[in-house]
Length: 312
Length: 323
Image (cartoon, rainbow over all chains, first blue to last red; front, top):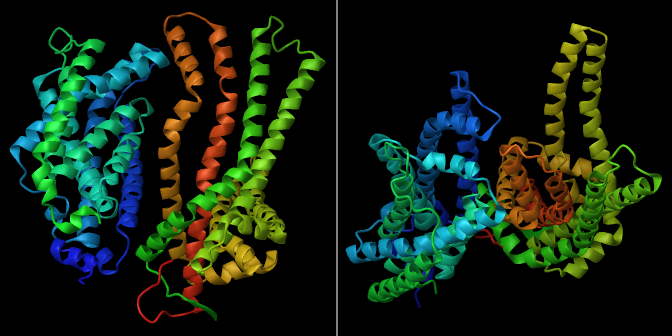
């Protein structure tokens, strides 16, 4: 009987040093998660500090009241967006691709499943994400209400996603929508989940979804982010392609950015206010129905995936 | 040379072996840590809770902090004493858990699977006393190295002597570097005591010899592992902080709101203080438990790697056998 590990190495071109030495895929995923996590968060903090320092040197001011803090924070937002953009590509995406190439496979695109997927998969993934959005936001808003966080503080928090002109909106789409859809998806789904999946199969969706939530260091959004992470992981797992999860991630962030686009009179483009419960009651069952549709639509592809992908 | 067959490890091998070791031993190590540190964390949490509540009641009462009665002061000091007892138990407990987890890890790499009861039994059999002695000796040594130039700097400032102050400043930098050098060189005293049953002084010699010639490598790997463990702990602890300190954060945001509205509401401040105690104790306990079920294990893997580099084990005939 043929060695399943040897077969997997042959069919997936697992020719990296980690694979050649017969080390555990789980260790690689954990090591990559923690190593890139340390690099990304420390590097980003350092760059953010440098950016804020430069702004302060060039005459930026801080104040003691919320209003003056908000005004001074607005002067940091531009450099901070550049920091996010640089750190996502240089400290998250680049190490991910290097690790995959060196440790696992010279065929990086195939490893992360950057393959041409079905358009229906992508559309359904986007629709599911949109349908789940009100429920996610409702939960996050409930946490904020329960914790009685001052509105001004939330305003400051939202400032990094707020745009006031079409040019700023486009730049924000690049930084907040395109960049995470590429970098975070290739890191969390393409590398971490893909590597855990080899031994854990469907359980990797839950594990990496929870890790995705924790990685954002936002306890108020933990539940929503973890569910979003699991949803994105499920799209990736079922379709055997990274494109649906990338499209869904882009859509999720795009809606947030679009909602915070301020028109010339200073009001948000979509003045949604708080999410009403009836909207959640309507969209959630629709989302579940669409998810079932996605599940059915991907059934054939999932069933006919190569034997080594089953995790057994 | 022992009968164990082990080749020197590459960085990838070290991590591979470490994660497998964590996977194999985490339940036993968690049991050990929970049994030893759980009561200490509860005592700390309860005493901190009572202490903060007492402080809040004093702030709330009309007499304020100026007219504290002897009875109130003694009650407050009683809680402080309980907190100190909890803290002491936590420190001693951490030493016990470090030794026990080290024994479990060393046994696992040597092909022996110890239960948590056996590990604790070996720990209490003299080893823990030696480790406490080692901690005290190493701590005193490293403190002295830094304190002496610091004292020189203070004397220099007090005597208005620029030269003495400058010399003190330079010596502090040199002392910190020297302390780091010694800290890394003595990083394997605990496995030496726990696994080889070495004496305190012998454990220093043993660790020094193991690290000699591999200092930079050991330094780099220990720093990397330390950073990764801290990151993992902070990821896990962030939501727990919100859960255990929910009332504290709520009161904190209420204070922010009242400041913004220009309203002075001391009752919210009292609520904030009252809600701080128990959460802090429990959180420090959980954080210590998570740290202690992982940290000693990377010292164990490095310890075996350094021993393999010194040719203390026979080389495996083909490949590396990972436990």
